[in-house]
Length: 200
Image (cartoon, rainbow, N blue to C red; front, side, top):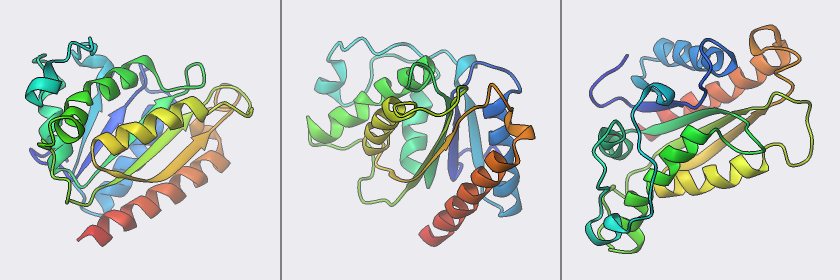
C-alpha cells in the first residue's frame, strides 16, 4: 500500500537484494496489510540521496539545500504515524546509506533546536522501531553504535523509538531459516502494530 501519505515509512538500509533485511520487511508488510495500515518502503540504495556536507544552509533556512530523493521524505516524516528502520550491522553500526539519511535530517533538527521554527509537528505522536541484523555471532558491542545513531535519528524526526530488535548470526543461519529470529521479529511487529492502533 504505497499511498501519498502512508501511515508507516519503512527504510530498507541494506544494499543486498532479497536477503535478510528484505525478508524482514516482507514480514512487516504482511502484518501491515492484514491490519489495513498503509506504508511506503524506501529502498534507499536505489535512491539518489546526497551526503550532508555540514554547509550550515539548514541552520539559516530550516531546510536542506539539496533537492534529491530525500526531499519528499521530510514531509512524509511529518505526516506519518511512524517509521521503521531495518539495517544490517556494519562495523557495529548502521549501513552507510542509512547514516546518510540520518545525517540529512539535520535540516529538521536545525529547524527545531537552532531556529526554533520546527518544520515538523512536534505535538504529533509517532512511534518508531529499529531492527538491526548482524551477520556474526553475538558480542558485547555488536549493536551499540547503531543504537546510538538511531536514538538521535528518531529524536530528530520527532518519533518515539519504542522497539529495538537485534538479530545476530545471520551469516550462519539466514533469517528465513531461523525460527527463533522469525518469532522474535514477529513479536516486535505485533507490538508495533498495536502501538500504531493506539495512536488512533
